[in-house]
Length: 358
Image (cartoon, rainbow, N blue to C red; front, top):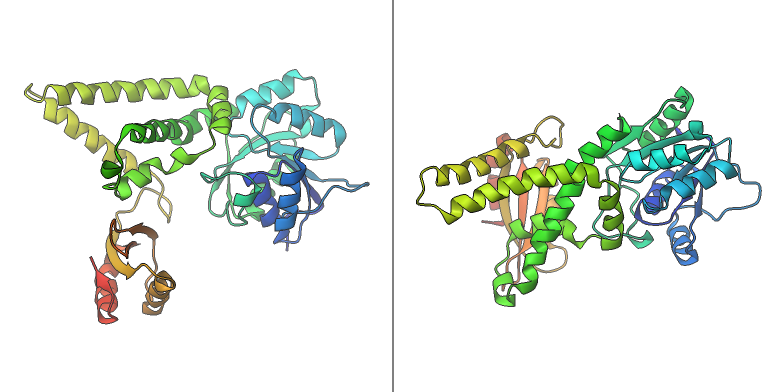
């Protein structure tokens, strides 16, 4: 049974709007999709994210999924057009949006900011996925004046699409995303930019480490300029601390003969270990040290599916999976992460079935 009764209106048919519509439609929710771009709206509707607006529509909930720079204006317009509906948004910066809405003089009691911590490096309706929010935090940012019923409605929205609702204050949210989302985006982009002047031969040596650290560098620059600009006051201090750490490592590498230089580098790596250990793992809590088994598969259709099917037959649960192609060879390297107590059985069973392990 669906948690959301009544109609949901989604304004903005990009990645998040389309994904949200797809997820809600799976539960039978009546979803209206609206976008100033008729092409984006039509594509989202064709994908099954909802239907066009019709005369007499009376939404219970409105979700604004537009770029951050126009989010406040769109929220204000929706509050005026549908005064009985609860309005939320999915912008990745909350305090500036809330401040502008409150300053507009609108009745903001029915507005509750929120932010699903989900996304992809690709954008637009074409990248929409119904499972985008599953297992991801959905931050809810209530403010004085919101009713419990309105807050509960946003909570139900998050639960309906498989997300984990988390309540935070707007400033607290913006400080948090600066550290876990916005600064990583900048660092990834700056690192990837170093590849522009790198020769093709050098890049051909790239392994999974470079792919992992630069994956999000493929994100939309226009969107990120808006996000970073809106949260600049929270991002700058984190970047300054990062710059200080980087300067210390650079100084150490330039003066390796000086006592303590190697210790400085070692401590930087060790601090990274401690930081990684705090990232929540699949089962919550801190990061789990999984055992890694690397299987080699032929680069041809059906091989990855066959490998995963046989792992299921063996009865071992995968905690994570990464796929990398071996440079210059028609071989795929599948990195399988399992709990340590499952490693021996996985290796033995895959070997007996003829799989090549690296």
